[in-house]
Amino acid sequence: DIEFKSEYLYLSLGPGGFSVFDVHDKSQPQEVAHYAGTFYDSVVENNLILLANWDYGVQLYDIRDGSSPKLISDQSIAKKTSSIYSTGEWAYVTVAKPNSNVGGSSGVDLYSINVTDPFSPALGSSIPLSRSVLGMDVYKDNLYLANYAWGLTILDLHSPSQPKIIDNFGQYGLGDLA
Figure 1: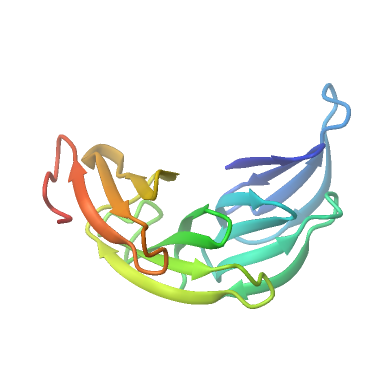
Figure 2: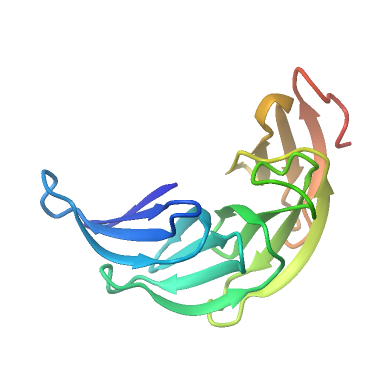
């Protein structure tokens, strides 16, 4: 995953870790920081980057000094955290079920986390999903989940701490999540 903030590029490299590049000179990006771990997804919100760390859960880094992110908190939900999306106050994270691979082929759990206070993120609720999640986005109080070959799942976020499945669509698995 790639995120930008000012003149810095933040790159989640899966098992290769997490890197920060200075892109002031677009013709010669320079790696200025690297963090070991397994990071599959990230999202930038204001002066924070939220990282889905496969080994530890969700980690929040202060990026006011873009070249040197500082870990300020984490929410150790469970191992196998792979996707993350933030609406500002709430983050939504997928965690692969036990004995599952990166794609979460045996399904995932979707967690809501209140990140209003980034120094103390608070776990909201979780909802089991029978399909893996490739990506997430929000539009008009709905969270849309791309489910690889299984299509699309739509969740209602009117109560952001407790998302509710509205429906899912797709060539495979139609109705599996409702």
